[in-house]
Image (cartoon, rainbow, N blue to C red; front, side, top):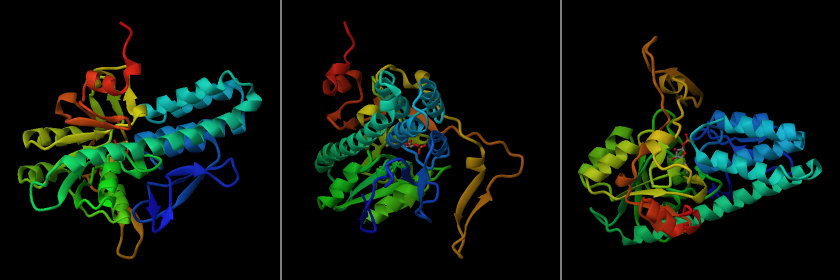
Length: 365
Ligand SMILES: CSC[C@H]1O[C@H](OP(=O)(O)O)[C@H](O)[C@@H]1O
């Protein structure tokens, strides 16, 4: 996507053909800074501290992390160490494991002298594949949007949670790709943007993205969505996912489940943008089998912002000594999901639905 007229992806190979560069998302919306990664430790830290975040982007960053490792030391020991280090950076987004297993399977059989080039080439392919997957999710989602009729006035009102835009992927996004393509097709569309406490990916990232693309939007408190749905102000919800099971249970940012409950209670369609690498075919029950990341309480107790003088500061918002719990994801059961929007088409949130699009994943009888 473009930032002030300049095309950007979220992550790319530097001009030296070795350094990896990415937008530092912890500084948005107040500062746009590109960071350099030169070692696998740089990549692991960037994922763990959410300099880069979003399931597909985490996968792409991990792939480049493996390339950085091979550029340092293409040995079997480094290959194993880099895989383990990056896999441990964040537990929930299955794209991380998908990308790391892909690179390990590619590199392990190769002679060490061939590993560096192969790793960089594969990481670049994963980035190109992700951008194309997300563009096609946008196309299929646009088809769904064209079938919707506004409940009030001429403008369609979407609600989204967290950030599943181009900043969460290599380009286009998953939940926001259909929004961008609808906007670009001239469909009047507005987006209610959940601020998404505690990391505020909605307020800081989704609002920034939509503003840069000229998409009308309004930031709301996380707890306002149900009220807006009760008053007919939401035509559809659309979110991303960090891991979706083969029966269609959707793990996504904490608070997604509550939006799905409100949507069901108010007859509002609830869509999930779902790229292939985010499907975990090895599990069925999202509640029992998906590891939910517990992040530091400080993410809840401290909030950062910009002062009138433009300084970015962090302040404490809890009483001293008050404990805080910070689960970063929840699981929306398939029964609350209207449809999954994938790069291969739209399907019901069910195993049969997913297998209709991915028949190669059918289990042997
Ligand atoms: C397109 S996947 C985006 C997905 O990732 C986010 O999590 P985080 O910001 O913690 O990496 C959130 O769950 C989004 O829906």
